[in-house]
Length: 100
Image (tube, rainbow, N blue to C red; front, side, top):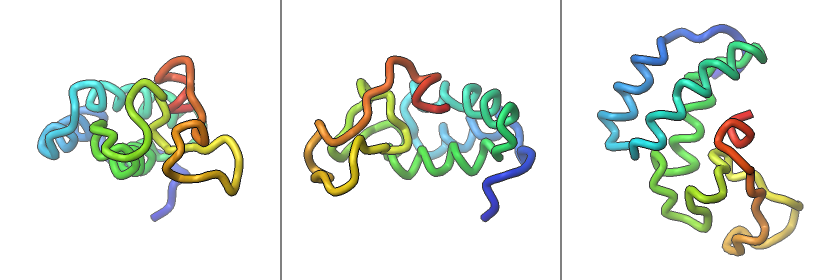
């Protein structure tokens, strides 16, 4: 699936999809950020939002990270560090920065 280009669904449709998947309210609210930031960068927001859903288990963060990291992509600080060590992952100061 191509990640560059214009959105092929609306933010309202994305929020409805996330709601149907039983996403957290916080995750659902991130859709607006993906649509705004994606359009500014030529990124299809629905693709990035779906990837974030996969990475965060719809905002439930059932792996090493939790929502306090504001890291919806699971970005690590350095290659080669343990996937199970929270210190291996980037912490963002806001959801806006994490989505960017």
